[in-house]
Image (cartoon, rainbow, N blue to C red; front, side):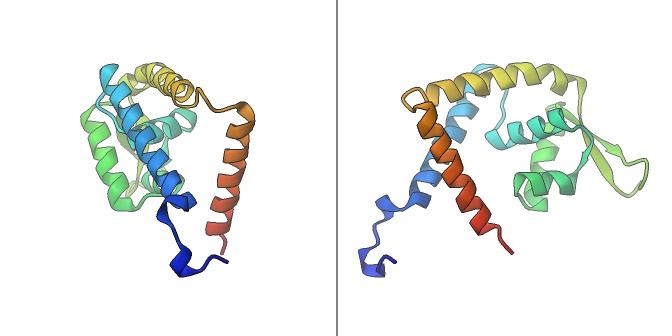
Length: 149
């Protein structure tokens, strides 16, 4: 166990995870903009989830994205304004909505996924497949530990 007085921020894994996440989010948003889409990485995450399973509820999206209801509502409102998603009344419970990709959203997904794939290649160009897998495995272990109980 490291002593408090020996703690160095620049040697903390969270510092680098946060920094890398920030830089990757900013980088992919820049590339979306260059492709004609004013979207954030979080917006893409929502669109991607709907691409994989259309018709999720707002609460399901909040859970999958690990975001609170207010943040998801704000993101969804923005995506509705951009005409990439639609809110439809849930046939089983008219008090709730299901979120669907719009036709514009469906058309945008191949372009957005190509932008993300190309950015991943660019960002990870000097990282071996083995290093990528070790990083993913390590982050999965950390995530599992932090989501216990």
